Figure 1: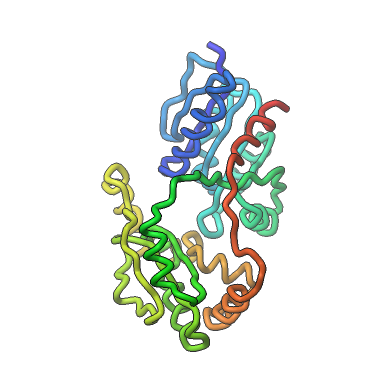
Figure 2: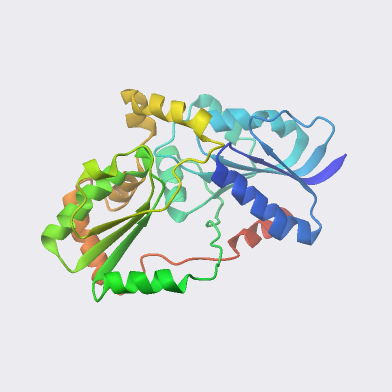
Length: 288
């Protein structure tokens, strides 16, 4: 049976959510037939596909896991994110030779891939922001808490790889330099003892995010604990996200980073802007 698109994701919930949104909002309304699988699923031998869209973290394990689907698809597209600086081996490069288009989820992901591995990224498609009706009460509470001060917002699950320990260092350095800046850290219970990190007094910890879903917890947490306690693996592979930011600024010192963060807060430059309907780009890509 001929299907338009085979969408294969890693086991990560975020990747499966991207695939679900692509199919429901873009593929199905445009009469594009599709099947969604995970890299751990069996190959659907009774089907063939014109396009294969692989939504994965760029690493040797994920690349090795998607090869089994290649004989079923004519055109192969990678939509990749990163976890630290990935480990790629000779076989990884062989797999990439058979990929038609590599798409990064951000300009920074593209730069890391091209700089560290000399791999050409064809396109950047940012993660799509979903518009929701704002909670006016929460917004008013936030404005009252913030007052006239400048605010830095951090939102993430409570996992080692997010770099929350580095964030705590940054809040302390900022507090020493400028008491007109406050931090709102929206996170949750999880792998890191937040109270032990020593966030500055100008930081409000908003504990409202689930760290790990019930579905993922049984198999994910043992792996996380293994990685965290295996120093060579941790140092090479699980470089945390805030260290990413330090590297982007060409500065590994959290103190100097705090100074640059202060400059950014007071500048007119936008620190980030939500983008919507970005996944529509995949319709154009599949047309080619």
